Amino acid sequence: AQTIHQWPVAEIKAVGSPLSLGCTIKGKSSPNLYWYWQATGGTLQQLFYSITVGQVESVVQLNLSASRPKDDQFILSTEKLLLSHSGFYLCAWSPGESSYEQYFGPGTRLTVL
Amino acid sequence: QQQVRQSPQSLTVWEGETAILNCSYEDSTFNYFPWYQQFPGEGPALLISISSVSDKKEDGRFTIFFNKREKKLSLHITDSQPGDSATYFCAASARDAGAKLTFGGGTRLTVRP
Image 1: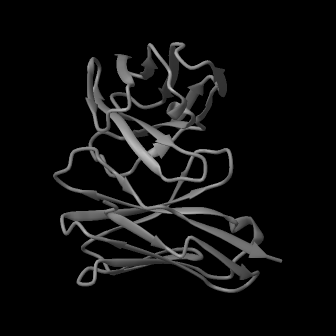
Image 2: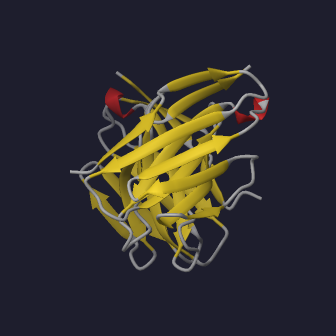
């Protein structure tokens, strides 16, 4: 069975500080990986997706960047946090041969002060 | 521009009743429609999905009805239980849109015992 793990569970950071969030998927080789952002009480906005190691496509520009250093790992980062970056960050995966069904991780709650 | 719309924003039903959640879309290229269930503080879970070649999909107490001509879908939850209280998101994807999944604003369902 596939498992998806996100770290950290929660972060409280200062405006202007750097950020790195991680996601690991186990039990599935060559998955498609995705990053989403969700404001409190809001909908989900897709940020990035990756279909292979080293390749990342940006969907929305929010002064964030993403990388896929390993087949099972997806990293979201920024050098300078903004207040607007606060929210719930979700990593998701899909089987690859079909991009339609996406499965979400438990999320990381980010508070920027 | 909101391509996927959901109504109502919130819905309260009594235990045992049928909850009906509505979704509409604008982009005629959308051909896959998953519904996600999200509990507070958790990542969304894929509940049930339908492709545009079908007009109905059933899975236990959950049924999607799809009207391609009117670009509308609905999720029916029969015999609603208090444990069904959650936010439900309708999403849409187009075959040629790569990995992009567009989410609606969500419906918060409360089932009263």
